[in-house]
Amino acid sequence: MPLSKAKIKYIHSLEQKKIRRQENAFVAEGHKSVGDLLQAGCTARLIIATEEWRSPVALGSETERITVTAEELRKASLLLHPQQVLGVFTIPSHDTPPPVSTIREQLCLCLDGVQDPGNLGTIIRTADWFGISHIICSPSTADAYNPKVVQATMGSIARVRVCYTNLPGWLQSLPADTPIYGTMLDGEDLYATPLSRSGVVVMGNEGSGISDEVARQLTHRLLIPPYPHGSSTAESLNVSIATAIICAEFRRRS
Image (tube, rainbow, N blue to C red; front, side):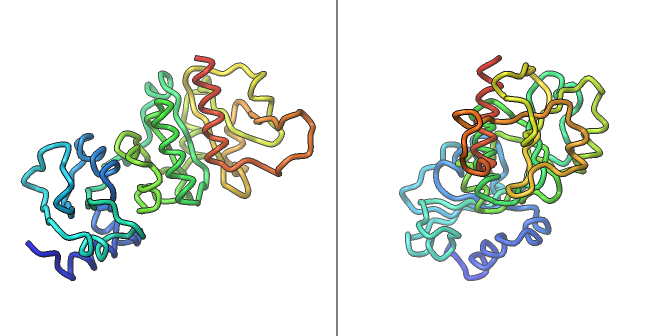
């Protein structure tokens, strides 16, 4: 079946959050991202690929596959340099935060207004690396199924559950003994503070940090200290870099 102009138009329309929500679909590109999503059992509605691409799993009857030339793939792709395959997938139904039992057993991330798609994608990839399977986001956080976010996750979007909720209300609903960590400029030295194996770690907006409403719910305020202590350095760390440092220290302790 040839690649129609209507299909190309549909794929490009999924760059818009409104259309992604209407269609309940998102775009992933490249053998790594598409392959990981397929292996994780995510539903592929459409696969557009060159002859060289080989699926890591058998495609189901619900998946339409169109074999194209490199030039045809370029027309459909949202990337400057397409990578053999493009897939349209159904957005997973991760509508609610994890239950309290999960919070008591696992470390979870909360993102309060992280707006840059590249940062969000990198954080999802970092969470996957450190075995964190749940990320709870404020509504002001970037859409996890934005093509730029999906691309930056390098397939990790297939393994990390991302949901959106009212963060202050959700944090307030957790049992009083739940550890809720947050990175703050007035926090305690990360490397000198006791850390738990489970609970919630909150990371804030790139410019303004954690909102006042969310900050009031924190039980532990953490600071990644500059080196050497008290030196004149950059004003702050990129939020995705800070998340990686925090996650690495939690995992090192455990």
